[in-house]
Image (tube, rainbow, N blue to C red; front, side):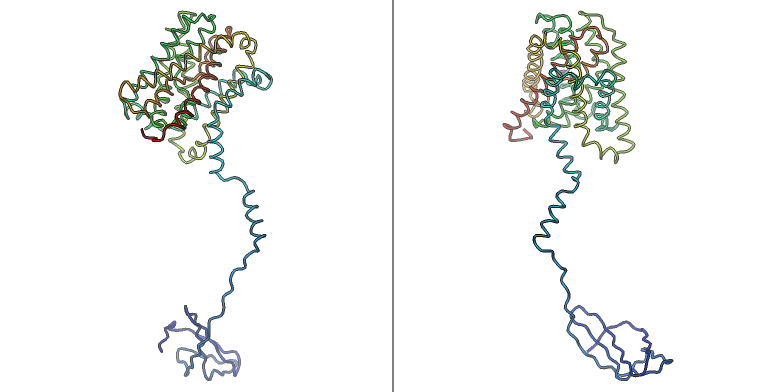
Length: 404
């Protein structure tokens, strides 16, 4: 029998009559190699390079100990302890997504809370509102890179142009008709017209996801309309609102530049420089944006409780018709132009849901002596959030082919 061992190694005997036992580990058995005469004096060394005759003795492998298993009650206690540990990032993301999907609930709750208990929200003053809206736009910028901004105008340019045309024509036209013919007070009419001139809001992306819309197109339309708002919002406001009250287009341009474009570009730059850092916080930005919008709505209501109580019943039907017409015409105009149902759902949401929070901030900055303008913007935010969510829920339950 041939055994393959290391070519050389040395063993030193310590006393006469000592037997040397060399254990060679094999996969199946242990082999004991015992020299027949291994006696030596205290000062002698025995080199195995010239070994004496050897006798091989095979020994059964020593039984291996199985790792001790905890009793069933101990293991269940360990599992319970693990379950009670800190939530994982995936759990936090799931909670954030679920909470963000309840956006209309939070907005309506903030409106009711701001009306019933104004002290809950009236600490959120104009400076915090402005900074909060800039934070929301910064969060939108964190979802983009510079290449995304360039692709906004190059990828699917036909669909994007169609969506931009609808967004800046359908709702402004309806807003103009309502503000002139509904019999509203001047401040409420200004608010309705101002809302119709706004770009798409971040909430539209959340609602488009629930409605199984085209998410890349939804984000592109929101981003493009936000960038174009620097020019379109002052222009449309001066055309629609300027006939009711003097509007400074230059001042409004600077406000939109500060509130919208600058934060978006800063967020885009941060995402381009530190994408790994942004990837950690980006999943939670929609929830943060939802929280800020909720605070803005609650604050606006709490500061205008008297106006809301006096004129709310009159302005709610007006903004209901404004946004429901936007949803309806956005969908059927897209279908008439031959788009898929998925694109039509996306255009419907983008046309029907505008950034009422931006309108409210602009109203507070440029019409400080007319609180009814702010009241119309806030009721618009509550109305389109509720309508958009109900419509998205209906489509979510009835659309079985997400790509149709």
